[in-house]
Length: 99
Image 1 (cartoon, rainbow, N blue to C red):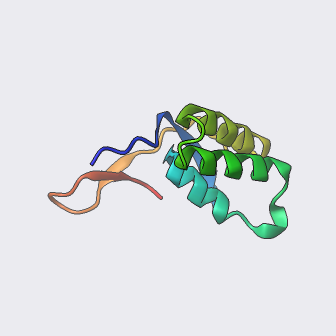
Image 2: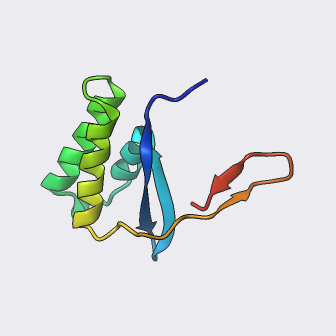
Image 3: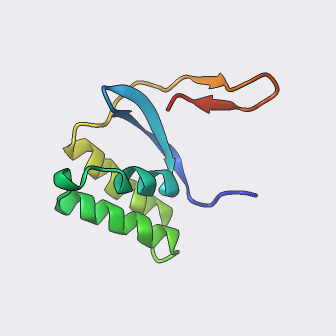
């Protein structure tokens, strides 16, 4: 099954205590935003969350959701230029990024 919600360019961000990870698509961005602390949510959060939901519903394109998530991440100093290294989970399985 091919996912059509993947970003052309994954978004490298820092999470938790500064651990690097990537947001690969709209669904991951939506999940990340849903987990954002309610006390820290603001207009930027609402715009990004609504854009991701609209992209998942097919109302807007994936790259528009990408742009709104990048803007949200930039405003909250989450963006990183580091590449996230992928390691295999177990022998015989596909590589996965650190999360």
